[in-house]
Image 1 (spheres, one colour):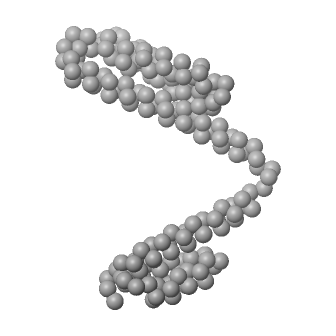
Image 2: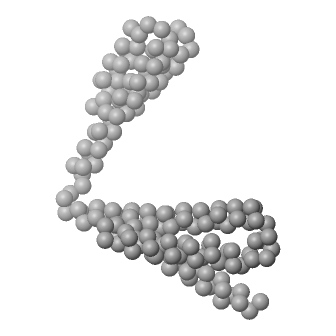
Image 3: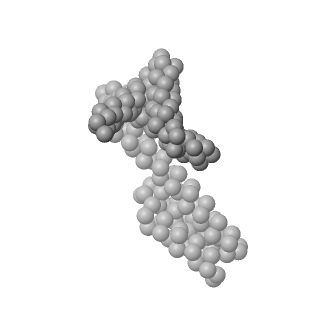
Length: 175
């Protein structure tokens, strides 16, 4: 017995030991079928395919179990979850835009080194504050009707970023 066939036997043996009760007979049959597969590598591919099929089978059972366990009266919670995911998506998209702005700022300073010395504050204000904030507002307006939660997330990030800028300017204006 070659190494690939040994790996296949160990893999399917592990799956049989840890398979849910409703899948265990099927997993055992796949392990017995391994003896009839010709070729060590073919046996390993059989074991990997069997493992994938058993995982999908077990996952379908888990999905059914979870669906049966959640009563219908919790339906508003699902709506809340969708809204929370939308707000989180909006915050994430806005954060990605800020990261892109940092990249643009760095690229501009690399291509035009004089910007770093002569016009650093203006370049920073345009690429890091003005363009992202305008983009946040425009995106929120466009998305408001169909994707209100995403638009709210974008606006939430825009307000937090604006507060950050205001705090920064208030604390550094004295120097």
